[in-house]
Amino acid sequence: MSKIIQTPLAPKAIGPYVQAIQCDSMLFISGQLPINPENMAVDEGIEAQTTRCLTHIFSIVEAAGFPRSSIVKLTVYMQDLSQFTEMNRAYESCLAGHRPTRSTVEVARLPKDVLIEIDAICHQ
Image 1 (cartoon, rainbow, N blue to C red):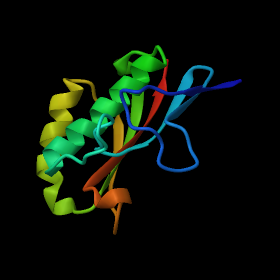
Image 2: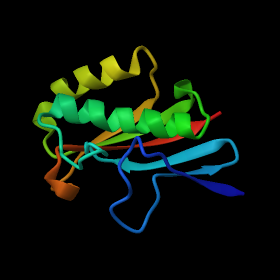
Image 3: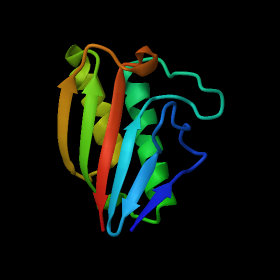
């Protein structure tokens, strides 16, 4: 049985998908863009964009009733891997010691020309 998870603390989907789907003890979170859900503005810089993406993920995780520690996998899509060190600094700060598995890939382009997109898988 699956359940759609939505929160106004993360931006609404900009296409034919949902923020997240919970399947029993698993939560699958769609790629989150660094968009302010209040005014749809995009944050400047890779560190601010990384923080915004992870904040959205945390909001969705909490809306599903999962603890942040349930995040077991994050996939980071970056437009420019030369900014990896700055992204990693913000990423580590946001996760505050939690260390899920992660893949990071460079992509040619992201929606709205953002610098980063992050998706997540959780298990509790």
